[in-house]
Each structure stands twice: as structure tokens, then as C-alpha cells.
Image (tube, rainbow, N blue to C red; front, side, top):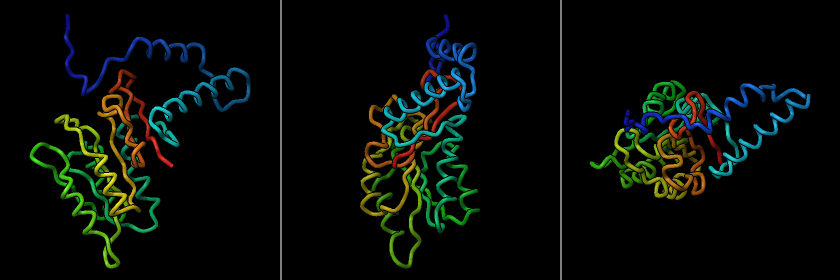
Length: 221
């Protein structure tokens, strides 16, 4: 008997998921953009699944991706490229490399990337975060364009103070978008951050007994 104890890295795909995928591959393989009967039925199923996920995440829109890394990249680089003028981007020191490695391309786009420090327990230093928000605001300073924080650290398991961060963002930098990497948090932490002020939330299927190669970026209004 093998005891597998590494579910934080990846999970075994559930039999129910494999069965649903096999049904789609063998029978419901039609192009959902086509107009014949089978294709329309598949399109309705895809829409229903998307709506169910959006409801669970409290999201206004769900964009499917190839995994958590692409969802993180889409959130950061997509939001950065849509801003009218570059500003400051705050990224926590607890982030996965999928987020931290975006510092260079974000800097190339003209943004100033600053790292939010952690406490000795690996938790985002909420006082330092508040000071960083306050320091960047003012007529002669750059606006904060984006904040990115992980929900649960993939290295330490530390659960980050997202509610407090969302409240401080609303108070001190209401124009900044707030992205959360929820790859390790989705279905482990019971409340979706989109319900209390987060704008973008990344997830990955293989962390929750789904297949590798699929993720999503959930968006608020």
C-alpha cells in the first residue's frame, strides 16, 4: 500500500471527474460553437458548468486557462496592459514564483514593483502594507495600480489576512485592483475572496482532485 501525503503539490483526480471527462471525450465531443443539435447541447453544458463555478466563487465572470500559472499571468499582465498609465504594483513576499517572476515584465511595461514584507510567521505584515498604501498616495506620487497576494502559502501553509488587506485597499487605495492567487486556498478556505472586495482570483484544478492542465481566473464586476 502506498500512502500519498503531498496533496499540497497535486491531488489524485477523482474517479467521478475521470468518468465525466471520458463521457465528453467519447460522446459529447462536438464543437460547442457549431449550430447542430449535439453541438448546441454541449454549449449549454459548458455554460452551465461555467455558471456553477462562477456562483461558487461569487464571480461575475470566469475565464478558463491552462492552469494556475496562466491565470496569475493573465491577471497581472492583463490588468497592467489595460491601465491608462503605469503606477505602483504591490506583490507580497509570500507569492508563488508564477507571480513573483512577473516583476520583470511588469517593470518593462513601466510599472514600479514593490514587495510587501512578511512577519516572522510568514504572514503578510499588515502594518507595513498599510504604510505602503499610504506612502504612495498623493498628487505628486504614483498611484497604486494593482495588489497581488496569495491566499494560502504553497511553502508554509500560512493563511494570509486578505479581509484586512481588502479593507485597507478600499480605504487607502480604492483605485487599485486586487488579485489573489487562490490555487492553494480554493475549497480549503471556506469563503471566496471575491465576496469581500477582491477583484481577481486564480485557481487550478489539479489542486482539488481535478485534472492537470486546466485552471481559471474569476473576476468580480
